[in-house]
Image (cartoon, rainbow, N blue to C red; front, side, top):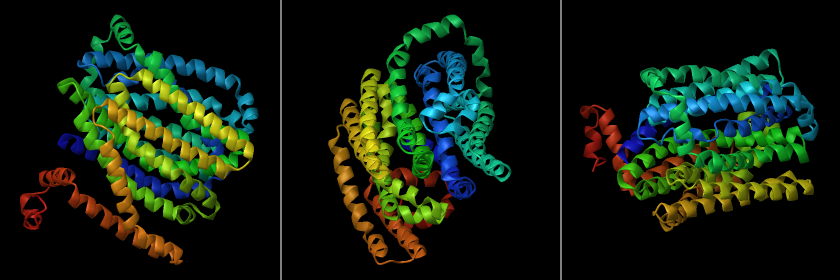
Length: 496
């Protein structure tokens, strides 16, 4: 647990900087681009996200698994070959039918920007590969700085482009340039491993491709279904409603999912490395699963409670009055996104335990559920009802994944259920002053102040009631601060 928290701290330091930068810069972006332009850009990114998933045929998940670095490097190059081939073919097909895509989703503007699709897919896929390799080599510092560079440069390019040319292209090119710069920086982290390229052979790549064939056979369809289930809302909202509604949804997801995904991805990467290591050493992952999942619940639940209470006020204050509807959407989606936050990091267990078939089953059930949900909601003509059904369905599906993984890992799900119940009650009690403040009509600055005080109170309770978390955090502090500066902490008994 000590090395897990230490590595997680290194990785989340950078992601927290990226998150703060996003909080500062996204409000600038929302004041430059309209909800309609956000909707067009989101449709482009949703198409790209589906292609990124199939680009490496899911062999990117194999990079962490081999015991020898030589085999991992062969897998790395195998992934690059797959990415270049699949990106070229699928990109060409989609560009050929660009006008058809624009007509189906009632977004004609998208046809003008699909020429950038293969480039974005290649850069995004390489970013994913580099994440896997740097995680394997435990180079979380470089990975963290790469994440920051991607976030900051994306927003800066979007703002700069918007000052000269206010169109969806500014948002799209910003994403392309952000990934490009991040990849150039992260490739520097491979300079110590360049010698491994000498071990790469076509024969060995073929052997490893066959050895891990379940990943493309079962994992890739499952990953595609997973990506489609994430991106289907964008497609369906554009189809049943319009690009403005999609723009509101895009910002709602961005505002909640961006910080959640950054921290969640960091946890997932460190957890995957730690779980793979524990599986190789002990043959099981029970301990690390128990330690991580219950603490994800404890740490993550309170921010979502605060967000649900203040969502609409936050969106109008941060992003502008034009984005009130996005705040309403975000409030509806928050319970589902919390379920994703606490379960998503441990879904790497499907790979560690080699349960790709089960993962594929879950993903296809999810995709079918979303099709039904959005068809029912879309035909009703009510986007609020559509998103409410989506959020409820999401909680049920991700809860089912959690129960399965906890059981298969040997950790059991009762501890997680007790943790969820206990911390939900604690969050409700601690947040009561904020709820009363909202209903009393207090000003937004006062509400923010109350939210900050209640957050401090909540995490102090967590700190003093979780001995393992407290001891690990204090150990990190002891290792990073000179002894003469922590005498007062020892006198207060914080290191006991």
